[in-house]
Image (cartoon, rainbow, N blue to C red; front, side):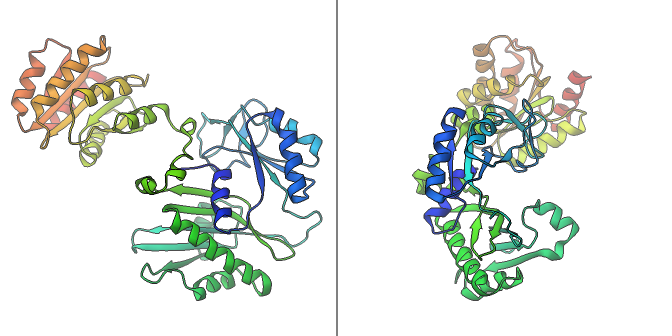
Length: 403
């Protein structure tokens, strides 16, 4: 589960990580009071206004309505409301949002931590995540902070530092020092970075996160180490242990169809194709998407109804798929193992009748337990639903309806 920068920073602060202070607002009218509060707390005279969306590249991104960047600097208290007005409520387009962009509902007004006239600020990249190949956490760092780490990895991979953490003993002091030295730090700055890394790792483990990314980590000219930005991804499977973190979810940042699918117990991911698919089992869903591609179509979604598919889940899946205007056909591919094919077929017929008029062709491929009985139910229903037994038959019928 992704969370906003201001939420991520609050988590870091709770675990002793030094951060760039800020106040979040949801309207331009509250901007001046928020900036005054921040100035009183930190003494800052300049303010950084940051769009809060679940996407990176905000500083380079543009708000469509005003052509403002997603991260801007206000050099006085008086400039803050106008800067906020140019961002909040607009659609921010970055390299991660795609051309459709994301609406900005909140902005973070943060203190300016780059000292006026400072000649030696340094920015670093620092992240903690699970290395699935090695089966342990890894700390990744780079002297090229402030840049997209993908660009650094492609152009100068030698500048990426990696330190793997043995899960049996945890992060050791020598490892934190090793990372700090590799970043070229010494003296007070090195000690501050070691403290920063330990606090960050504690926050990462304690919250059951799948990724912490701080880009940039700032070293000021007086050797303070601060998290200027923060991207945190929480492990959804562990949220039952963190009720407070589960409440940080912002469904306005998620696809409405994916939110609706989650409420119905369906695993759904929207794609850009023209053939909707409904399948039981993630592996079979991936194979179905391949078949759709081979048939000349493009998958419009990934939809796994699970092993206990019934009339209710099938109907919910239908309704979600049909809300996508790009869908020109629907392929239902069910393997009857735990669930019987005749039960799924009855669910398809019942859902079809409940929904009413469906203007796209539907191909239902049933295989496994009671597959023949299921096909018979489909054929005798009198509905515009085509049945198939073999996967190649289903692929051919998808191709036929698309041509």
